[in-house]
Image 1 (spheres, chains in turn cyan, red):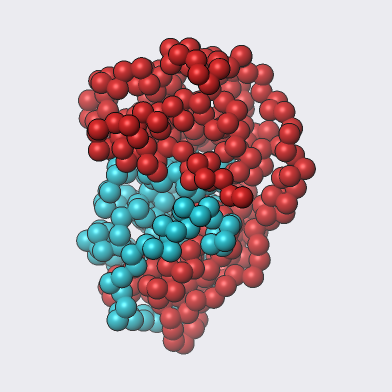
Image 2: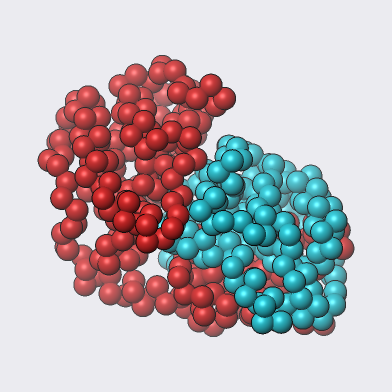
Length: 154
Length: 250
């Protein structure tokens, strides 16, 4: 379905014309330790938030924190777009925020450990507008000894 | 997603992850990305299939072993739900098993839509409660309103767009958005407990074309598009009814 030809024409046109500029000459490359020693955090653009947090509003460029031991029943979604499926998320948080899978991979020794904190933003604004939040999230992750980020779009 | 990846790498954090829109990843060129052929909203492929989700995650994590990049790899498997989708056409025409009260005509006065909406919410309650019990969670709740109050607020807004916000901390338009998203979640959580409603398209077609809530949302869209309020115009343009309902694929 995420193949462009499966997306309705009007939405496809918007996706084809979306401004992705600003990253042309930027090629950072961080190596990091062996996979089985990495500490991993999830960052999602699904505009997920805890029930106790404020929901994301239009053009919201802030971020929310999801604890690593969160009860999935406490996670809701306040993304402004209606052009993606929410029924999968309603049935299983892991289909868009695979925290339980990440814990399983750590238990199996595939990765080293799971971060104490994970993060969500709304993917609706241009990435440049989210940059201050991204830098703040990076600082928080480094304080949590995270060395690897697993990014999940919606 | 690619832009965020570059910011994190610039901060000294290695990144990998999922790409859903391949052309966006090709343009931003993040260090490592696994393109998946899954439906938007399901970056790990399919709900309640831990083994499949794990395979996707492992494939994305293995990109961290690449010696240089950018690396953009295509995931080779379709989501198992795609197989269910193939059977979708066989299910077309199946009646909704929920016993709804009589819906008003689409040209009915707005006041009748409001009353019918309340009855419809009540009719779905047993299925919603069953879904919550089975899944041990609900995603309803972003408006902070009980679902009946969310329905009443939506119905009231259809009649009087100057209605006061039911929450002091949020403007009326934002509460409206959260309220109808809660109603959509309530309906879709309830109906997906039925085996026949196993694809997002089937659920969406039902919601927007066979329910009173759907009729109310189409009416709300028309009101918002005609409004002089900039936020309501935004809602009416692209934040109430999905594009594939407005412009169905041929």
